[in-house]
Image (tube, rainbow, N blue to C red; front, side, top):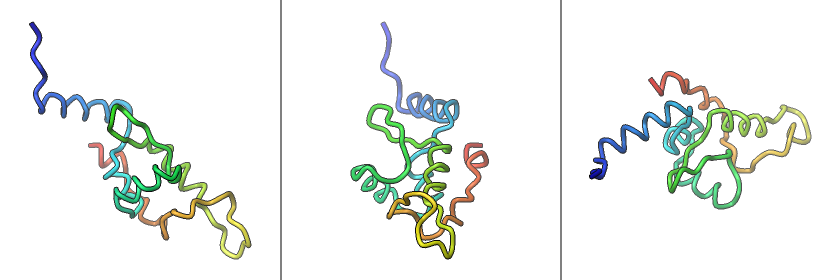
Length: 106
């Protein structure tokens, strides 16, 4: 007869999955781009912000999707229009995005 996994076992599996698939939590991404996790929640409800992955009820972000979103927010100084359609909810400065995801995963 199988027993129900403990909370520690489930957390260990979740951590391993995040590492195996290189996905980041909402808190990690919010910190990296300089917004609150609740801002990411609002953006998702409006269809804005970076693409995300849902596993059950949990929300995760792939670093490549966050980088792509940042690229779409690029504005060339002096240009009358953004280089590409920008997200109005982009961070004021992308300088905070220099978080080393590889270092954080270690």
